[in-house]
Image (cartoon, rainbow, N blue to C red; front, top):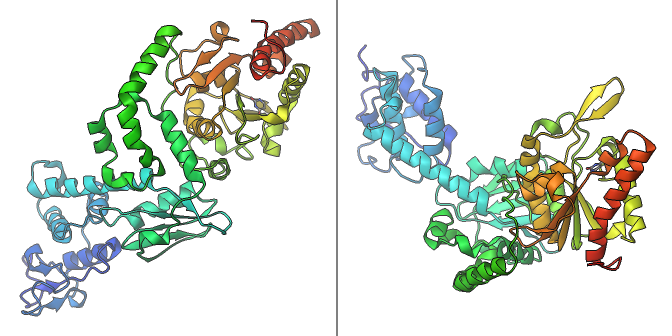
Length: 487
Ligand code: URA
């Protein structure tokens, strides 16, 4: 039998893909058409809308005359994305490619200049971009009167809700949320993902208390010296600005940029400081309160440390604390209790604070790495320092905590904390006890880690190390006003 002779006698075959975002229906239809050897030009993918005057055979009625051909997995990935595009020709285009690959062009995808390949890749790329925007720009708003329920309104360009919703289910597994779009809504009840019809902007609460935090956060991270409005618009098209509470700030920030750059330059002129390299870029964390961050961190899989650990140990303390303390990582007791600084190092730190008249309950205590890294030794779990990769992977959480708490000052305990707060290149031996100003304007200094004090060989060495530690922390006490300043 020659190719294309098996499709019966009808002039064309009708394929119905409903709803239009249903990728599984297209896959089943394409498989059936291939097995029935229907050539691309004989399929009406509009569900009969185009050729209805002529009639046509329903695809589902055609007998299979060959096995399903194998297609490269790369094609499946391109097709999965391209199928979410709104372009009406996508179904026909992808079927034509399938047909060609199942025929005598198995390497079709490698021919980048082929018009079909080029078009499919362009559609897939547009869908990936739209998906990325949805991940970046969806903002949940608390439902008034409901306990931890959030709704977001979003207007995607393409049919991407089903594609992107699982990302939000993983990222915000601990809360109940809905994302409403004009054509479809995704709903997560804390256990399972469900889909419903579309809605309107009015289905999402207009504004909630957290939005002030978004605005403040944005005003803080906005660096006028880097202002490039053309690039900003291409990275964050204006279409999306309206969903962002912080967008209301943009015109003002842009207008003031010139003045702010001058001010920045003058500030740097008056008080020359050693350059602090920017902290390493980390995947940003999406959650708009400390409580939401804490919940999201429970499911963190950004590095493998979550696996052997009991739980993520998130920061704790007042969410408007003026001082934020960063340690290295939870130890054995912290891992079991889920609270930072409750083990031997935490107790030593508490003693030093007490000596300096600093009320521990006023501090926000957290760590550079949120999971305990250890090596099992019999029944014991021996602490292991986190690698740079762990610190970097965890940095999104720390940044988000700093953005939420907005402390006046940060104290880093140990080299890992200093790296997380100041970025690579910082040397504890050189930086110890010296206040620096970070790019976000928060002042910070680093000292040794209390567990380093505890690790000193004998009692004398430990006493010396402890005095040094307390002396460093005196800078914090002076700054916070619990002891008089000697400067
Ligand atoms: N060491 C840390 O750095 N953090 C803790 O929470 C406990 C010990």
